[in-house]
Length: 121
Image (cartoon, rainbow, N blue to C red):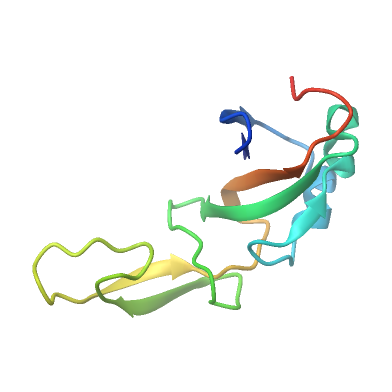
């Protein structure tokens, strides 16, 4: 699944892509990398997407700055992404996914960096 968002119009759409060959250009790319959308299909011709993140099949989120494509356990504290402090000064060790895109992602968040010729259906 691809979660497409366009910040200029506020549009959000979920597109399901079954063919893994269309997703190959996204693999081994890091978060916030810009990728052309031509391989996804004819309707995305001319679009450029920025990888915003994603979740793996068990629901663990991707975290910027962890340069791997598997899960790691980190000690989180106040102010870090993927963590909400429940009590003052409390830290917690949680599992998160690295920022490299792999085939085991369930959902990938893409942000439209450059609009193509036609509208996304």
